[in-house]
Structures are given as C-alpha cells and as structure tokens.
Amino acid sequence: MSIKVSVSLFVLAVLGLTACRDPNMSAPSEGSVATNPNANRNAGAVIGGFLGAAAGANADDDPFAKAAVGGAIGAAVGGAIGNALDQQANELRQINGTFSVTNMGDYLVVNMPQDVLFALDSASLRLDLMLDIGAIAGNLQRYPNSLIDIVGHTDNSGTAVYNQDLSQRRALSVAQVLLGNGVPGNRVNAYGRGEGQPVASNLTPEGRARNRRVEIIIRPTF
Image (spheres, rainbow, N blue to C red):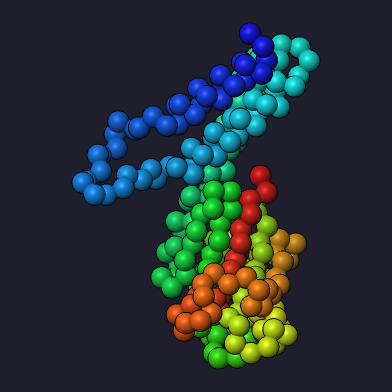
C-alpha cells in the first residue's frame, strides 16, 4: 500500500469517527436542527490530525507509522485549540447581551455596536461600557495565547476620509481600555476600516446601524 493511500485512509477514518453521533445526545425534536456542542473541538481535532498525518508521512523511515503518530498528536493539539475557543466564546457571551460572539472555527469575533459604545460622532467610550470592555480584558488575560485585532467600522454617512478617521479613533479607544486593564501591548493591534467593509446595506437605517461597529478579533497562537 502506498504512503499516499495510507494517509488518505487514515484521514477518512478520522472523519468517520468525528461524524459518528454521540449516543448520549438526545434526538432533535421535529422541525429542529441537531447541534453538537463540541463541533469546534471536533473540527479542530480533524484538522490537526490531518496536518499531523501529512507532516509525519514526509519522514524518511517508516513514514506510515510516523503519519499515524503525527496524526494523533495533531488531533490532540487541534482538539485542545477548538475546545479552548469554545470555552472562551461562552465566557465572552456572558459579558454583555448587546455584544455578539462568533466562533469562526480557528478564531473568534466579538462584534460591538458603535451606537452602544459611543455617542454620535464621538470616540469617547460610555463610562458604563468601559466596565464591560474591562471584563473582556480579563477574559483575554485568562486565555493569553492569542493576538487581538481591534477594528473600527462605520456606515457610509459623511465622507470616506471622516469615516476612516472616526473608525480609527474608536478602535483605539477600545484598545486603550484593554491595555489599561492589563492586556499586553504586544498582543493588541488597533485600526479602522471606515466604511469599506459593510456587513449590511447602507440603504436602510437598520443596515447602517449594523455597519457601525467595533470588532475584537481573537486569533490563537498555539
């Protein structure tokens, strides 16, 4: 059996195992969608296993054995990363109900509406919201193996130059609170995108409100 075939079979076996349904999970009710609370952990394990197997297969002596060992190690590491992201996301969701937290599989996005954080045309954070940003800083310190991008966004009201400047200043305001609450500066990068990356139509008030936001992007560095 060739090395390529062996590795392919190994990957298929891992995928098959992760697709198996947990017998302890209750059946979904009619009309509902079944969800797996460990989906991100399992996805990380599969990816880690594949990468570990591929790396091990490049070894010179007994490559299939090394692929199996590499796959096991990679699966363990990938599963740990996915599990940590799930836990961190769940903790972040408890801080403020107006903040949304999205687990993208290999990084997290905390979306904070600017209308909640700032007054109109202002880059000064509301005093009560500074406590919530401080709580996010505490979470980031409990999970220290990550880099953090803080990105400001606006709608398309006003000029592009003004919107770029406002988004930059608002991102920096959030960053300063994180830094002031103990997050190391070498983990944090803050910048604005202005009106250039909308997530909704700017033709409606609701769409413009969604586009006015600050995102905290958390990327693991395991």
